[in-house]
Length: 495
Image (cartoon, rainbow, N blue to C red; front, side, top):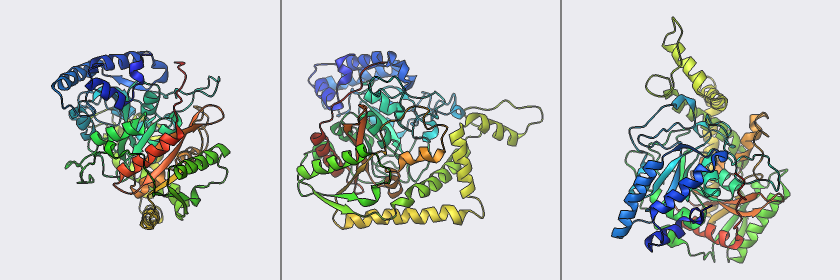
């Protein structure tokens, strides 16, 4: 493996500015690694020529000076982001052959900042999944292994391709999206950093929608500093997105002092779940001690409506998905089923959707359509919306009482084996999101930080939840936790 691909964004940026390496050299090193990593199935649409062109342009900017922080840095893009002229399928057969005529706002901002796109990354179909087993491209394999066991592990979902690619040093960083934990859970499963910003901090325009009131784009990186650098390029107001916040984007990297003396960290008692593995309990306790040692005050807090979060989420998210996915009908773009004699438009819709949508997407669309139907709307959807408001109020009350950030586990376990949960009750899979969905329901920023290994040598992460719009402060607390934990483990290269 080329040492160039092991660089963090910050290290690579400094080397580029010092002319110790060129963007083209960095890009070629990453492309070579990607070629040799087919076993991971992380990259699904390769764009080497686009990458080389962008790298040459970045090198020219670097020579002129005053290049932005992301200039010349090779990244991967989750297949949920529309990229002009490049397949953008959301890992679904129903969008096969779709080549957008436009660029998503987030990728446009990254390219304007000089970033280099190596290709598109695998994911769960329409971002619906916690294990990256629902993709039309096949499963992503986690680069980590349990000791000497060859069992393929999930990288988490839905941003599994992004997580695996960053953990395996195929790219320096990647974009992800998070609707119920799809950045933070895979980050924890692969030993990297992932931040879901406040809802509205990054534009959703040009990002294929799952649940519009929950979706948010964010960076997946090797370090907290890298997350601060990349978030600065991704964030910002977008008039094309009515939910985008018209707020200035601070210099997140400049806020990373590591000084959290006097900060108050909340530990929610409701997150102590029955049956939580002892390793997760210990990780949480160790993380609490690390923050105390760094000068923070730790307080137990209550978020009383936490137990209703998963049921509320799995009513609201499918309801919005049912509405959003109605546009995929085989008429304008993507897959269209072959029709029999006498088939009309209704049959075309039915056959196209039956062929184009995978089973998990079909399940969620049916649940969503059901909870929105006459007679059930009030019983399910409206009730879930009320619960959501109560969950948000819990967080508001805690922050109003002086809490600066909340520390929780990121996941209820380390990465599990591919196939281990696929045939189980789907609710078992949904329970992987138990610590993360509250953050989306409340629209808050949350970050997963790798802080330890389990007994089988797999990474475990902790989650920090911050006040709305205070990603800089949240990242600084995450930076202090990262420094204290000193996590430097990497997966052994078997692929």
